[in-house]
Image 1 (tube, rainbow, N blue to C red):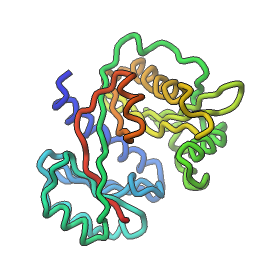
Image 2 (image 1 turned 180 degrees about the vertical axis):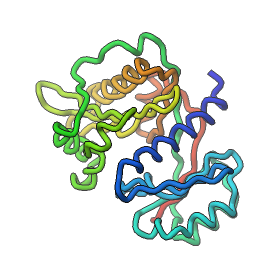
Image 3 (image 1 turned 45 degrees about the vertical axis):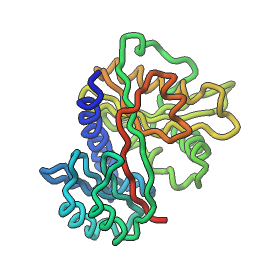
Length: 253
């Protein structure tokens, strides 16, 4: 796999995933410039899923500055995201001007898919809108946040949208992990892998991720992408994911 080319494709796939997520919600909004800068409002009350993102390797400061003044961002928590660790000081200044002084690194990881990935994963169920409450509860517990904040992810409009799938892992009838997959072109994005604290380090996150990869391969995807936390990187590396690049994220303190 050519990591640089695959990272470019995955960046487009990630942006398309958020565009489609926002399209399922009444308050969703998406606008992208020709230079690859986008303003995103998904309808999800998390800063990481709203804001300005540039998927160009050379972000346009003027576009980031102009879009950062969008009135649509005044109603949601948001971030500025650019690819790479070396960030133009003018982009940093734009972030500072909007109170986004906290800077974090967000690893982009990639993995090629093979026919072996198509095998079924025991203990994992696809989630529909009618069975979404345990999924929402497990997702909230995994991210250790208030359950109502995760309602959008359990919305039937999201879980039953074309190319989008939610998953819950069960052990002895108890939900123990979640994941969410989005098919975009010949790629599948892995999102919302969450395991409540009491069930961690038992392989459930791996099962949830594997379910996304299996359905992705069967749907025609040949590459998987995800953004990992530092804590999650060892798991994904064990599963064959490679670090392609880091993204820089600017958020409110």
